[in-house]
Structure formats: C-alpha cells, structure tokens
Image (cartoon, rainbow, N blue to C red; front, side, top):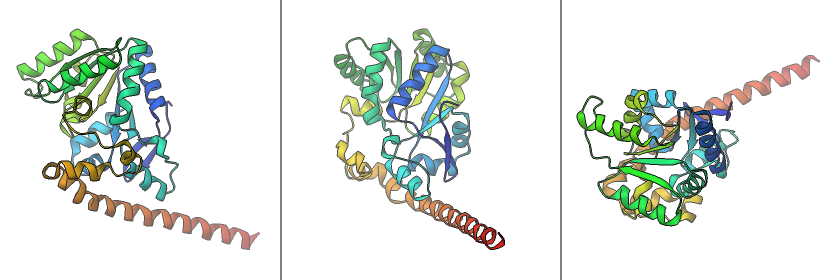
Length: 269
C-alpha cells in the first residue's frame, strides 16, 4: 500500500502531505501507471452523498487527499490521526508540484478554465520554473464523450503524452469528465485541480495563506464571490453537520461498549 486510508463521514481519505503526493506522482511516472489522485473538501463531500457519478469517481480514484481544513478538524473530533500537514490545497501545492516537475522533466497538461486564462497561468509558471514543460487546453468545449470537440481534446492530450494531466473544470464536471474518458487518456497521474490555474493567472484572487492555515479560506472566497459560493458555504455545511453528528454518536457508542466490556472483564478476573 502506498498510503493507509481512513473512513470519514462515508468517504475514503489517504493521509498525504505535499512531499508524499509528489512522491506518488514520481512513482506513477516510473512505473508507467495511470493513477487518479483525487481530493476531498466539504463541497465534494456534499456532492458525493448526492451524486452517484461522484461516488463512482471516488471509488475509481487510487488516492484521495484532504483539501480543506474542515475535514482535518472533523477527523480529529472523530479520533482520526489527521494533522494540519495532511491538508493540501492546490493554492499551495501547485508551486512545489511545478518545481518537482521542472526538476524531473515531467510534461504537464492543464485542461480547463476560460480561453486564455490557463495559458496565462502556464506563462507565470514557466517564468518561475524555466525548465517546466506545460501546455494548456481551455475547458470550454462540449464534454460529451462522442462529441467531435471532446475527441479533438483527447487527441491533443495523447499527442502531447503528458506525465501529469490536471483537469480544472470545477466539481463535479471535472470528475465526470475524467470518469468518462480515463480509458482513452495516456498519462501517469490525473489530478482534478479545480480553479488551480485561475489562481496562478490572477483570474481569481488567492486567499491569504494565513487564512488557509487557520481554516478561513471559505470566508475569503465567500466575500469575493457571494453569488457563486453562498450555497456551498452557507447551506451545504448543514448537511455535513448532520453526517458528523451521526458519526460522532456512533463513535461514542463504540467507546462506551468497549468500556463496558473492559469493566466486565475486570470484574470476572
């Protein structure tokens, strides 16, 4: 096993740091594997419990890291060995990932974002890491598996033969696209990346990193994009709270049963 997994509110989580994620990608390249390295935050947790295709995607994923301090905190409350270092968001990870990619001569292809935005982000990354090999394809095309546009995108991806394919189309569209096309993609690591390149390009404001460490990125994003994100941050968490409460009660019940058995054992001995 590359990484031990844990169950949190019905989903599988691998405890992975940035260094371990980069190591996984290196192994995938060396082994000529094709691994999906997914991630979970509160939004994906909500969609997972509402959308069967999202569940199929996460069942297909080889590894799932944490992208959200809320999950770290929930895991801690439930007695899981989650730590701050296990929360890896693309706003932070993209830089170490690109640094390693430039060192190890990995080819990266970023699929997603509006026309021109991904290319601008790639230019920023190339300026910082001069040896970086990165190409982009915008995400504004017909994603239906049999559409001419989708077939052209797959041809372009496979012609470039990327070691890493980053898919940034937002949830759950990016996961659905990966699930529907994975058999026709030649790559080693597939990363659903959300708005990663948008932050790099400056198209979306990056929250101050201290807010990320404090678990307050959601507040920054809500203030900057209230129309788009109000439901994600003000409605969906109530569904997660119910899941957490049920799981918390179950954890207490298990601990109580263990305590009762221990007392009975001591009384009998």
